[in-house]
Image 1: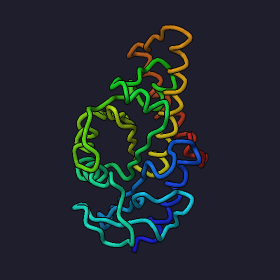
Image 2: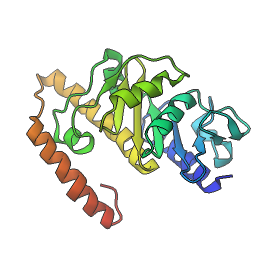
Image 3: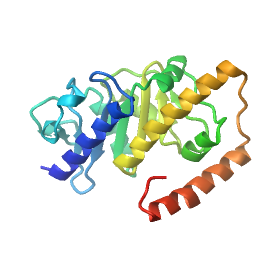
Image 4: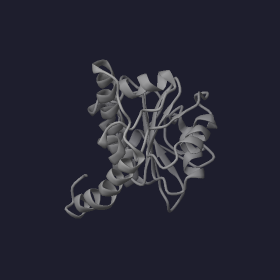
Length: 222
């Protein structure tokens, strides 16, 4: 069942430790099949280095396991809530990447003080409230607070990213950690200054409508 999607989801999950976004068995990536409405997600508590496509778990939008010998991720309910309430989303990723999670620990959004933040996120990276792991509460926080950003911090928890593809969600997960690291170091150097909204809008429009489009036409990632 959904063999091609299971391969893509497994490959996407393996990108998380490769980019230093997770350690041990933490974090997870899922994707929804728009034809069937079924979701493929990482199994719970399994080391990344041991995972194969056959280990991926298929669930329906009610959380019932349709196929899989292992239990689905403990974050499954939050992923399913996002899919049910944000129909354009095709992939959801959760990480505890170090610098972005440090911001989540404070309950503060990541400020838009770099063109890289304006480009990728279109403004500050929001931070939702605290929510209980394993419930729909996290998904509700994501839907309520993420706005037009592809990434959100969850207070005292970690990072979630969304995308219209696995690659898009992965890119945002990598970028949110990159900008969080840079801004954290910048604040050691001295005070930071947020970009004016006009400059944020100009940069985001350029990135989305020219740079990213041109890169896609060449068959490369923006």
